Length: 190
Length: 240
Image (cartoon, rainbow over all chains, first blue to last red; front, side):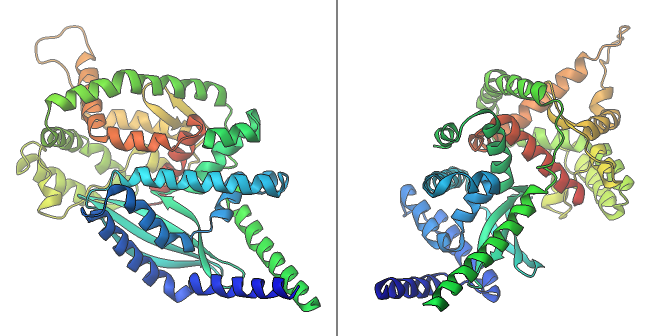
């Protein structure tokens, strides 16, 4: 029991010290890391295969992949599928998100990304709007943060040009699950 | 010990409440409660359109891109865009975006003259005048008309009742709809119109093949993916 408690406490402390994104830090954290990330993308001396892992390492702590997976599948489906399947799903879903992100990186040339504003929608929601500039076009990307139980802010969804990533997966998963089984959904996701 | 347990329970309750709130955020969204009576037809038409894209439009666009250098294609795209000025001008005005409609007018005048019939977008590169895309579907949405159900049109792709009505207005305001052959053509033929709109389509596609392919790779189930993308995007464009 004592061992359990110490490990629980140390786990809590560890996660807090690793992430601990406070409300006031959101803009700074994102600006700094987006700048580093675009630097990595532009740096020709870094091999292509090493770029994505570098970027993931920076942003992973602020993405709540478990929640994203749960929201994509929908609460009802999630509750009824058991812990083991939940874990399997989160794993595949996170991999899919990253895969899709890596494919987008291939399209990157020298676009600038600037933080436009940070808006507190509700007590526990913040929308951080960024603009990706390509030639004369501006693409709006909104990072949606929520405040978790430790008062830390984590990303639960990203809007690209007004299209929510989670909503996109949700509609597709709902459509697939009306016709096919969960196992088939997992296979399609892989 | 009891303290730890109550703390854990408290945490999980807290977590449950935020996550059910978030669940609510998605389950009540417009896309989720979408009424889709034509889903069967839409799904078939989506695969048909996708087939046309993959086996006709994409190969043609790629061979065209092979012979036509990118700057030339971009200029052609600019010229077509410049011709579509009436649609943007009228709809900015109808939505009372007076400043934007004046900028559009300025763009049209500058690009048609200095920009050599619209082939060079000097208005945005030299004068900082940006394009303000608005169409009749957006104007109808601006005045509160709901989207109606989703309809996938042959060749034209995803749409909905509101945007189909808007399409009638757009066709009316589109100069390309009025192009006719210069020689005395007794039979009223719309061939030239289709050829021009076809060239416009191929030219446009040739500039965006990579983007579309990257987008499509994200789809697990094509029809709901495109429907959700289209409806969310339109809602966003109307709100701007």
